[in-house]
Length: 379
Image 1 (tube, rainbow, N blue to C red):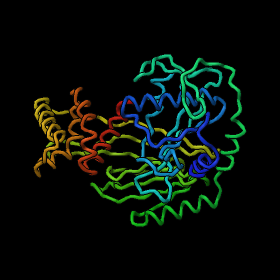
Image 2 (cartoon, one colour; image 1 turned 135 degrees about the vertical axis):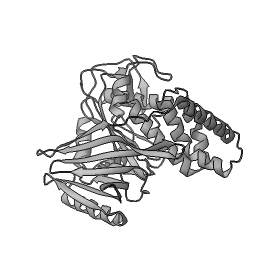
Image 3 (cartoon, rainbow, N blue to C red; image 1 turned 60 degrees about the horizontal axis):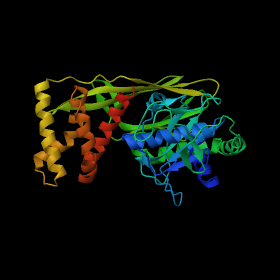
């Protein structure tokens, strides 16, 4: 089993960007340009390294390889995005890797790309941004470039990739260190652990909350410490956790509503199945059923939020009441969109830079809404 934190360190120490490895300060697949560039790199790495794993490490300063981290990113639907835009899509996995020196809400993103068919070329299925459907990309040094493809790709990377992965193998000392580190760091949120199949160790922590005899957790952190992978992290949502000898099950709830009337809605179920052969798989199921509202009420709320957004864009000061309404703006636009106000998504995207500039609290609420939207969109 590969320790992913050690793998990232080996990639950063051993190689500059090349035909099987790339690094990024950040990615943004919420924007069309960012999505197109991400797909281009996936396509290029899959084509240039068809017989091995390729990697993109996210949260790294380009000049000095400094590990600065990015926000936790839930990848459960990223394969759906790859399948939608690429012909002969590779298998892509996005994992969140915690590092001790980073703040709790920051991780390093590790994207692993493996060509599904090493004798087939991956290409864009349809137009996106400035790239045309049918385009084929390869790696040229540290760049992903459009090229006329050549099926006779020389396999020069297999020994190098195998060596890097071999040096990142986990061991008992790394596992125990990771468990103690988790417990010390999460001591104020009831840390627990469970060993599955005498091999896998899952640690989790969260603030307990009882609702009608049911136990929920907030400020939840869940890690598979064997691989140094953070499976779940949220400072906002309520989560229920169940487990037996073979599975660990998480149901995530989101708090949504209008006009001070809010409810908890199940968003997604994640089930981790542990197997006897030292393998595991993660299954995710979207549970979300968006609440429906009277269209007249939504029209009023939608227009009110548009007025508030215009004030924000003009740099006008907000009243105390408007400041409170601003906290509800991202969720209000989301609910309008889910109730077939299609233009609400454009307003939400338009609001992003102004919410980020206004203050961290409302921008965090925006990011939570964007995460929900991404799950729904690619399901």
